[in-house]
Length: 207
Image (cartoon, rainbow, N blue to C red; front, side, top):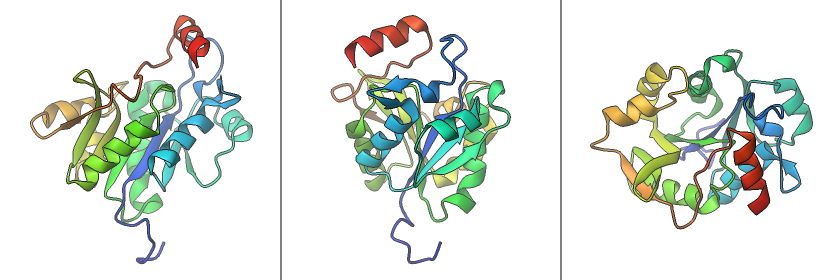
């Protein structure tokens, strides 16, 4: 990518979509059908509509099946061979690849594939917070930190070091709680994730 590329100097979206959905028993979460298409496609569309022009998708469980069953045109697709160790390994996979896959990116906006209630408005608010100077930001719901999370480039190494098991960026955000900007999104998004058949049934009935 050349220096003059218009997306240099902007955040890159990182979509974590490697989970097997064992508790759901319905196969990889990325391929759950939501509004007529795989959940991973829905999540990519949300990121694009929210203002992300570069998107990195991390696959793991059933990666070949997901790649064959979902349209991810325009995205950089990474495979995480250690997906079974937890979400942290997927975040590490993405952060390690970003300098080469998204040169010049100023931050990573990290989103989860299994939060279909988080729409473009929440993504746009986090991007706006970064444009206004935030280096660490997270969507908040009634003041409680949730997803997506925005991690400035200078924090990537620290974020990767603390991303173990299913913790993701939790250690980083706790360590920098004094500078973390919480961006209230409770009026425009629903933060529920999909981890059980009951949760999926409840979400599907209102989607």
